Image 1: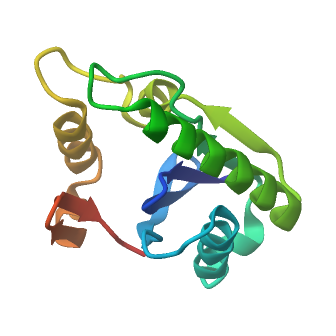
Image 2: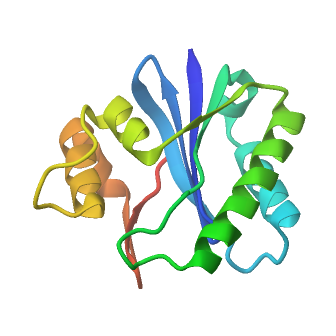
Length: 155
């Protein structure tokens, strides 16, 4: 079974194609300079359609929109903006690919991919980075440094 997992924000959409519990292709799509939610969604589809795996997707899993505030790090406007984008993105994906879209929380997705969602005392981004490097040792060669941190991009 080929699953497309998507982690969407209004500036970047991360994707991973998972076949038989193994990541076969992953990366991210920068959409921060695109104006409307519809245009952002269509840009993601345009990029994904250039990847051979897209033709054989059985299921699409989309991270569910953030529904609350994260310890003072998220404003009400951010939550609303992300929820609006996720709703448009989910609709456009389902109409375009004609596939089931399953919404999962970030915690559920981490448990499925990494075995657990977090480790006490380690922030989530550090935990995900370490867990991915442990599970997929070759991933470090695809690490891309950015102004805001690091991203993985491989395919």
